[in-house]
Amino acid sequence: MLTAKARILHYLDYKKVSQYEFTQRTGLSNGMLKVGSNISSNNLKAIADIYKDLSLAWVITGEGPMIRGERGAFPYPMGTELSMFKETPYYLENREQEEIVKTLQKLISVQEDLILSLKEQIDTLKQLKKSISE
Image (tube, rainbow, N blue to C red; front, side, top):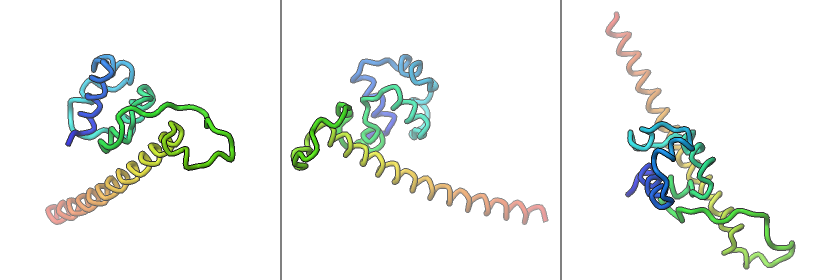
């Protein structure tokens, strides 16, 4: 399975954007795509602010389309039968946003678990330090 960073590299290759151009436009460091395997939420925001057609849900999960649907005003009058919206860009964009929210909620949950684990490790190290100094 590709990492989020590998998916971003794939997107850049698809769009014929060099890594240099990417770092210049986003303001991110040269090593951001080379070091480690995770991408911070701040870096994702910087990328999304510049590359608006890139699906963050796809970057994070690898699911769904890489390129977001077109944006725009709601194209149908009130009272139009809802079943016809299922394949419109407006419907697909909102569905993608819901997927992004769900993905970010999962990411928050994982990060909360990590924080809890790190706090436990800190407490253990504090106890160890205290027992050593006594």
